[in-house]
Amino acid sequence: MGLLKQVRDTLGVTWFTYDSSASLSGTTKIFSDGGAAGWMAHVDKGRVLFIKKFTDTPLAKKAPGTENECELYVTQALQEMELQGAYDAIPANDSVAWEVKWFVRKLPDGIAISRNKALADFVTQVVSGATTGLGAGRAGGQAEFRSGISRESIRLRISRPLEMKVSLVDARGNAGIVLAEGHFDAGWHVFHAPQARNTGPAWLIVRAAGSNAVLYRSLIPGL
Image 1 (cartoon, helix red, strand yellow):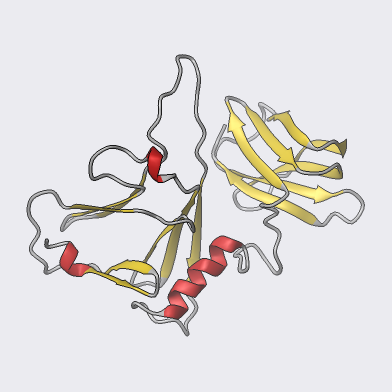
Image 2 (cartoon, one colour):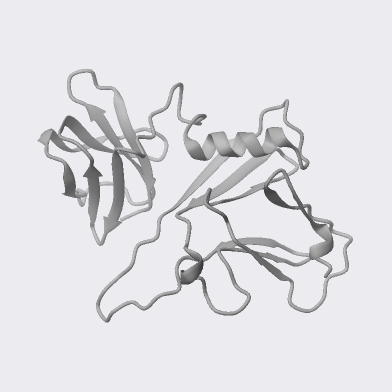
């Protein structure tokens, strides 16, 4: 109940405003469905906005009991934003993929840190790709591309044939490595990362052959 007193539903969003003076006891967790939009966000007093965007889980695939897609665990020492994918069986020697993307943005000065439509709209703009921290224009390419990693390989799916160049760039935008270049048919393609590359997160960049325009970029964890 100590947590629920800090929760309000308005503007189509469930808002939790942390109160460090609130008395907490028992199980300090609350759960909620993320909705079709599939995101969970946090903004701190320094105006840093952190968003987790995820693939929505159907109601039939939720974990049993009171658990749900979005979990908020709060103590006097920390706040935890946890997401849960589909509750399902995984066959022996098999795997399952559930895509979650993280976004970090500086909240524009004109938007208040409170329950307000401008804040909700800005989060929607970020997760939809309408605003990006990677430069002018939209270069998300979510509709045409999908990517993932498997062991020491990078997987990329394109929805139509393309002349393109696929590269890895370190998290600071330096030290690019070309993985492949040329004509690619629609479908999945697998690229092996060079063993000599630096470990750690990197950007997967897809550019159009000729114009060199960025068609798609995705931050991937270390291989």
